[in-house]
Image (tube, rainbow, N blue to C red; front, side, top):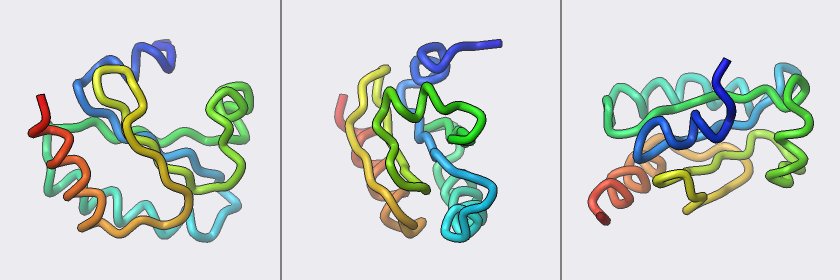
Length: 101
């Protein structure tokens, strides 16, 4: 099984969705993330991480509320936001990071 470090370094851009099964707003992020993936294709990986099953990781990244989204570029966190984020905002964010080399 790959480690979180492997995951965030697996692609130049990786969007992480820290979520919980019991969280209503987290359920809203599912279709939004699918829409984002359909738009951005291979330019970023999108990975969902259940905070209840990965408590140490959530603590390490100080995830206090779910959903919390983080964008990693080349293994470094470049953006973070809690709550539901609209697809267009995420697409714009990913495209802007993809262009900054």
